[in-house]
Figure (cartoon, rainbow, N blue to C red):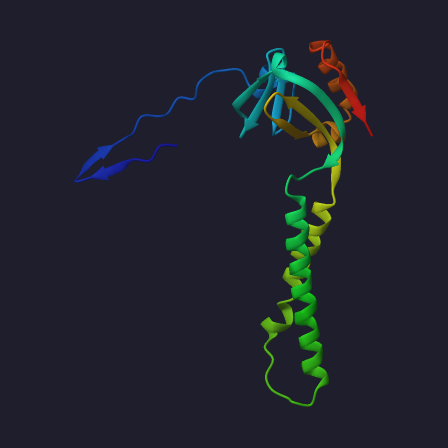
Length: 178
């Protein structure tokens, strides 16, 4: 939707932007997730469904499909989650101590609710840090790429993905580790 702009009594209608008519993401790649897409050219690393790097099959030394952590920085997520949970426990102990003591005073409602949100966020981070899923590890000469296959596992298309990958690159040893 284009907005009309009025400057000094002159109405300016900016031209409509034409989107390029190209193939959709389903037409470009036989299999794709939000991280990567695969077609006969190779493995395309994606950001916002746009290709930012191509790894041709010639450059791949080995492919391993195995279970692994879903997030790259899972130790950091675990540490931050434990810190949030420790803060919530500490603050809850202070609240309980205040109500059990005879000091008296004012305790505001916000302070009573405060430990709930860090505890909830901490539990979420701890659970996500321990989450494992099937993933594909592509080893090239200079780098290892870990790509999650969670969407294929949820859709039940792991067997189709494996057969398609084997048909594209029969020369590369594809290992399945559980």
